[in-house]
Picture 1 (tube, rainbow, N blue to C red):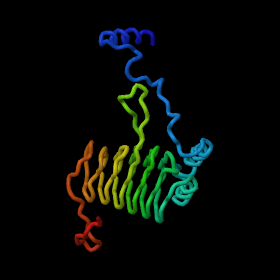
Picture 2 (picture 1 turned 30 degrees about the horizontal axis):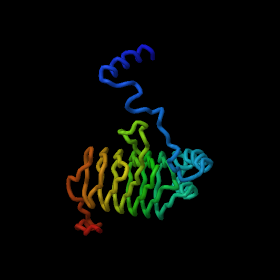
Picture 3 (picture 1 turned 30 degrees about the vertical axis):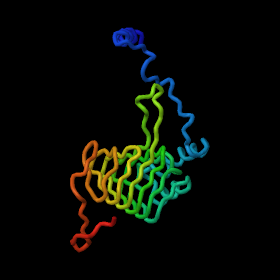
Picture 4 (picture 1 turned 45 degrees about the horizontal axis):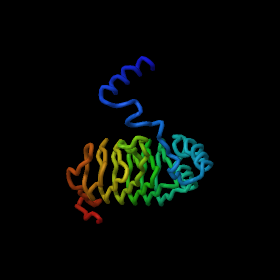
Length: 212
């Protein structure tokens, strides 16, 4: 490390900076962050999750049971696949008849609300936390995520902190939502933008009127 430190000091000095200027991760503190439950309850969840939720040898009944036991609101007819991870189940609300696909990660430092008839495909990441990059101590920032009803997040898509995904919106494969998604539109890209309306057909092949 000594060999690396001297060139670094020289570079900083040429820019009029010191090694103690800028971001200082040693100053980071998260003591003020409210985790929502005592440490012993969080420890129980850390033991239960790999056994009853993430494990491919578990089942939907056990996954929903474990999440409800630890404070999550899980609606009727919800399907949760193996590999799913939830940071804080007590900050999760899932509506009726939702699908949460394999390896989805609900990183809910803040509340995540999922409306009825939503589909989260494989590897979806809901990220409620970030850091203040302008802060010397790299302060933690958290904001909730809301998915209104009939949303589809396609495989490996990402939803960032504070995003509201409006009713009927689609986030395409691998896309990243950093701002509100429009209702009944398909969104694609990074950052995701609407590319066309989402047309809904009835079971007989006729166009159906989307709910608003």
